[in-house]
Image (cartoon, rainbow, N blue to C red):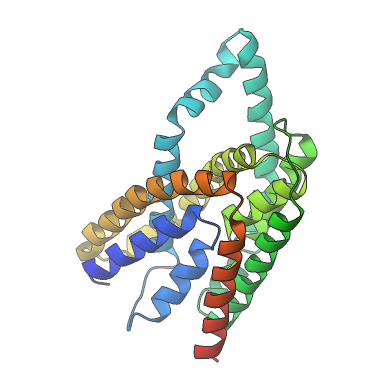
Amino acid sequence: MTLTEGLILGAVQGLTEFLPVSSSGHLALAQQLMPGFEQPGLLFDVVLHLGTLVAVILYFRQDLKQLLTAPFRRDIQAVQERRYLRLLLVGSIPTAIIGLTFKETVEGLFHRPLVVGALLMVTGLLLFVAERFRTSGRKRLTLGDSLLTGIAQGIAVLPGISRSGATIATLLLRGVEGQTAARFSFLLALPAVGGAALLSLKDVEQLPSGEIVTYLAGAGIACLVGLISIHALLGIIRQKRLYYFALYCWLVGGAALYFFR
């Protein structure tokens, strides 16, 4: 893998991780178009996801500071933040179970562009339905919201199913306000991406020393572009424009089904 390819894939990851169009699907299709692309397992993909994880940490650093210090504080706000931490923990459990159970099967799908294309079509449908039937929204999340969102995030390990799209759409369909849904979706990604990174440590020893700079550069670009994407998505949700992303997923998914048939 060349430095240019690493930077391109990093930009793709940063742009598509938070916009509801499936970063894993776009990475899989982009890698199919790069002759001779190879990586140990899914190590490069995971490194790029770590780049966007850093973007979430930076963007929501004040929220995270409040959440992480909540167990040690006794003010009224800390009570609500401890409850929010419990919801994040509950949501992470089904994600971990699904991810660990189907890890080997899912990795094989990254090399099947027809499957990726079909799942992008599913993402488009999910976004369309969520935008069509969303309500004005509530700001208080429930245990049921957390569990269903965790399941949606677990299913989104499939390349072509957008993680942010699936989780935000789930919450919108349950009547959660858009900004609240996006914030929970982004924060719920932290333990999931961190866990995936730990599972990929076994592939680090297979990484050619000459590509370390490429991996780091890709992650850096993913982080920078990811920061812009988070800000953009929050504005898009406020303006209720998920229809555009549904159309985009249908176009890209349809193109993949046509060109890789």
